[in-house]
Image 1 (cartoon, rainbow, N blue to C red):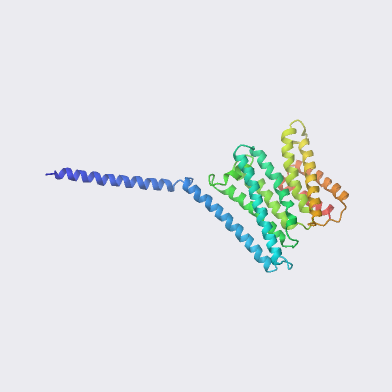
Image 2 (tube, one colour):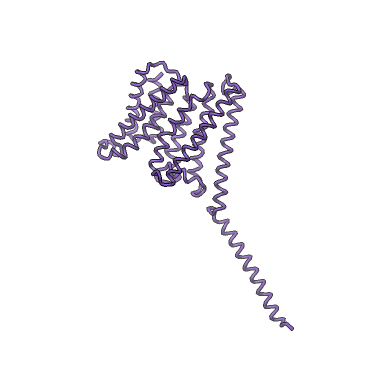
Length: 320
């Protein structure tokens, strides 16, 4: 016959063990809830940002298509031209995303240094995009389709700069910021795409003002940094020790060649009409590049907006 006291003792032990297990389970659940950077939370957050990006892109593009169909973006829009602009918008958007992804991947793998990947994206993004402008229709509303590309990049940068460290967006911020800090992408890189968006909306293929402004910002400023860091250590300007003569010369050469090359391409494809003869156009672009290089030497705000504003203002007066 079993001892009742022993049975009671065993029952108490079982109850205590169950309570202990329940406490441990709840503690683990609470611990997981308190750590938003766990694997599951990170995946959920990453998916949330990608979902927001996709929804925002869909709203922008569908709204633009609807406005084009209603004739608000131009009375000349037909179903064929809407399809053309929509297709080119998607094509250039995917190409832009692939380009940035490739560079950021190379930086993440250590193939490129962060400062080099940043400047490669800075130097090539706007010129490569402008090469695609003749593919859009000649409707005045085509700029709203084209502006989708920098708008999408602006949203990506905003999410990268305001998101948590481990949600899948840090690869982008590491590649395009000087220090690798995610908040830095809301500075120069974000201003860059805002200027690109503004140039598309205000100028696009109406004139060369936007082309020249973006060329000086992208190619000029980008090459000034790349060449200046490598060959400008012993030839600093006496009034601006952070800038070099080599960098300024690279700025003038790169912005001039980029502006002239893109202008020639856009004129050749009949995307832009210019009244000036080519010789006069080249000399004026060279003058604008020199003045823009001087603006870049003086620390008046961020050169991602001071340089293109100066170039755009001059080109609106000198180039027609």
